[in-house]
Image (cartoon, helix red, strand yellow):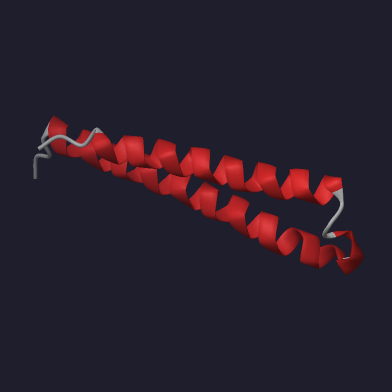
Amino acid sequence: MVVSTKTAKNEQRKLAATFFNNIAVGCVLLGLIGPLATGRYGHFLTLEFVYSEGAAWVLAAVLHIIARQQLGQLEE
């Protein structure tokens, strides 16, 4: 069975997009579950929490955009 170069590159791009998207999901989960895992519920309105939560969401968004760009490079 011979796989064309175009098909192989498309599969590599799909795998890269899946990787970046899964890391983005991990960032979202870390941002949501991380503060709850510390057991300190009173710190949700602190500046440190807002920055860490914002950083997790921004990083997730950037990784998701990278994943979408990888899918945008698929060849017909």
